[in-house]
Length: 346
Image 1 (cartoon, rainbow, N blue to C red):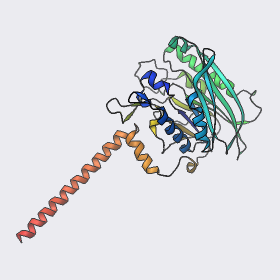
Image 2: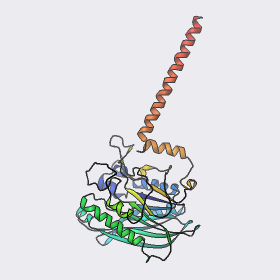
Image 3: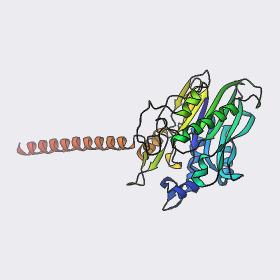
Image 4: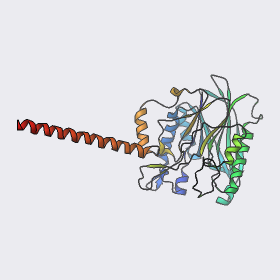
């Protein structure tokens, strides 16, 4: 089994530029605290290979050091802005004890959509890496990607063209002549499960086809079928709560003959980013190798009470149990009082 994950870590400049409360504390960046949570989420996940989005240049040294202590190697590339390297990019972290990096390549797609958005044309880069499983000797190729976020009709085909460029680069024989068992494309697609919807369109029909996903499916790529929300935001009434945006925009598509299985990550702390880590297993699942079992139940309860996934339901359930206990306590006290008065009368 090989486990793959995607995690957009929310680069530190984004919260200030877009008033994203999850990256701010009292109006100031909380990056120093968040990067510790992010590193812990990665190392405690137990995932073999992780694709990371929005990884800032300023955090590379920290992540390389903190992940290395847990046996992960990290490779990173920046996007391009006005002919120069952007201050953030994509990265791949992998367990160097289990996987050997045999080849790598930097691909790019000139993202003209961003031209009218910021006034400057930026180039989205994707990082391709080929690994050999030390135990099975099989080869896997993976592309860490981050697609544009624009949501107008004219932009959907361009996002699909970006995916086609990535597939061509990923499957190119120029990278190596090795026989590849699995091809993986993982990242923040900025494309949700409801298909080609324009900005402001609130319709949530899963029958609406996605141009991006169709391009992948036409070439034999598939995902594990899980459509849980992957994006959260701070609740406007309670800064200690997160709510779900009900959008699945972080994807792992695989071209393989093996089965795919969604993996839960019980130790995940949601407060590291506005994205959820998404994980998939390729092949037969061995859950004993995923995540840390230590303090599993405590972590599970902590996450549920703080996060969007079942948080409100869980708190309501606790309130119901509490009310039932109080009810039984009242009944018990009333019975005791009745018994006491009965004895006094006798």
